[in-house]
Length: 462
Ligand code: BES
Ligand code: MN
Ligand code: MN
Image (cartoon, rainbow, N blue to C red; front, side):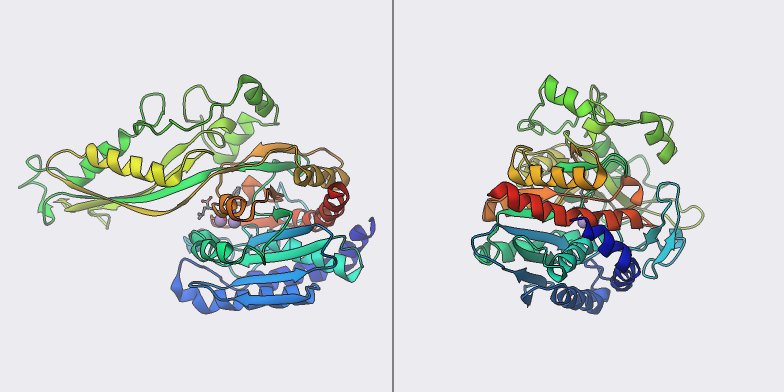
């Protein structure tokens, strides 16, 4: 199948231009201001699946944003690959930190991407990675190289918790029936160190509100005599970790699986430079749970982080005031076996219990989801591994990721199939951040590698 390389080189400009057109539509699912654009993006995906050779495409209405479904069934006796991705993106703010506007894609070279990278919101997460699958399908159908059946399911609410997809999947089990689920919405270690993501963390996201006196107070007249909600909130938050950076919520670690010494040794073999890591982030030291390495801290261990904190006076100059209220948004990344609803409840009970007299505390859960691990001895993983070997000339390293795609656990539960996470992004691609980008090399490498997955998966399934 050396013609995929040829196809890419003959069509390179078009493959890039089409992705750029997709990136120009600001499909921010979190902000209703962009509703029209999100819907326009759904139509764009529908059209591109049609053009890529799907026999049937559908815009499936849901309580929220539509799910785009497409399929090409060539023979009921052959295996079926279900591709999942998302067409929504994170908000682009803070806009002033972008070097070029987020929805006006530009190609620039970087140290890590000497062939150039496309800078735009969603370029890596997930429009660019999802679109690789559409283009790989286009190649396979147009050249008569599709070896099995394929279904696509592309949603528009991943960045806000996949609520509509959680509604859709259990109602459409037959339609979505498959032998393996294929997703490119994660990353790899480096362009010369391919890796396959074998795990995702779960998530529990909560908001807390601490209320003190019923109104803002003069900090001279009342300071020292009443509980200051900001002082109290920060003290409560600080108490959630002990001196070893262990989380102090009772029973929080009960279901956390401890990896064996040999599993940890295996993990430690993945290439990693602490110096480069520190340099890239301009920090003089790493920080985290005692007795765990950086790569363990960000993958196999659960975490608790404040994502935002506010209250009181933050305007120009000084205002002497004790605020009536203080707030924080807190995320907990969870590992497999930790149940996100249970953890949310543990957090709530604990946080309420540590509130001192003089304040009221309210904990509001947002979204969440379960973690995921996939074994590496199944046909799907083996096919992916062989595909990377073919196009990278190296065996990919299995690696658990710290990020979350909560819907993956639901796929396994409802559709009873394994998910293979073939991510082609890099941690330095700045997803969710200003100046998000995706390497052109990575985009094309993805398109090149995907057809081999289909080929090997079909062969190994026999
Ligand atoms: N694609 C990411 C998740 C990801 C990125 C996993 C890189 C592994 C490596 C996804 O779009 C995402 O941002 N997920 C959210 C959770 C979601 C419920 C908002 C996350 O991980 O914060
Ligand atoms: Mn994503
Ligand atoms: Mn994301």
